[in-house]
Image 1 (cartoon, rainbow, N blue to C red):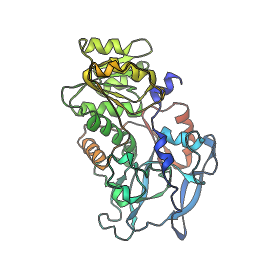
Image 2 (cartoon, rainbow, N blue to C red):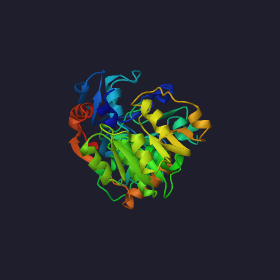
Image 3 (cartoon, rainbow, N blue to C red):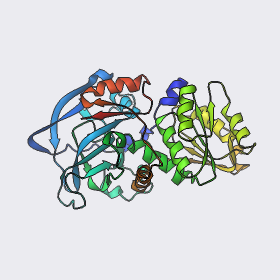
Image 4 (tube, one colour):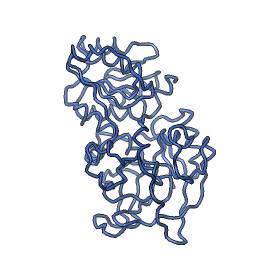
Length: 374
């Protein structure tokens, strides 16, 4: 895989999704329809069609969200082309990220009112018996939105009320829609699993990617000093603007050497690795004695070779994580509201141009996040 792909690619462990039972067809209101960007066969961006589909009616305990803006993630490109998962019921509507407002509520839902601004969790268990599972993303029925159920590339999306949060960020829907997946993942990785605290020195890889930019912002919010890796001057400028103190261009520099020089030979307290492969193996050497390496991606490779003595002689910890839970998301949104974390919006396209959005994602032609507006 080319390094350009590594820097701009999103991560996701698709394996957990294969264990989720197929979701039953959503109930429909007879005669109602909505506009959506859907695909009926796997293939290139051109398979996405802007079409009318039946409007889902909110089942008991669920809400119907009017989508004001939908975020686009690279995972959806892989799903559309069928390279990571093919047992998807077609036609299908992709999308895990959205900002919207309550359009209707199912029976038993009392915590929301119609018209209230909300933002759904980007992933949650499909089986209510798994709702209290910890960590949430390890629940047997956990699925990212738009994989086993219809997602956010539509005018309306049905979501269990338990997995919907009020949007009190004060930001435009287009900005909020860039946040869900990368924000909840970064908070989980940096704050909860990495345990980053004020004064820590933290290494974040792919500092210009979606997850990398958010990891930098979360670590900075916690008071850490940050080193990051990038490719090229444009990415370096972006990473520095977000608060990275040391920016290493891996096209010409050895990040292990530069990080060790930056820490006076000690190594970082916490390293957050969203790349895997050989990068993770080198990251171990850039981490201090007793330090923590958080593994949360694999776009540089799913296999890692390292000497085990690098751990038991140095008391280092290697921890894995995926996406976070409601508390992670709530904490992250509070930091957004306070101005500590900002969305990185590249451009907004009409929902009717979802195919073009996927073409841009596939071509690595997006800096920041891309959003669709119904």
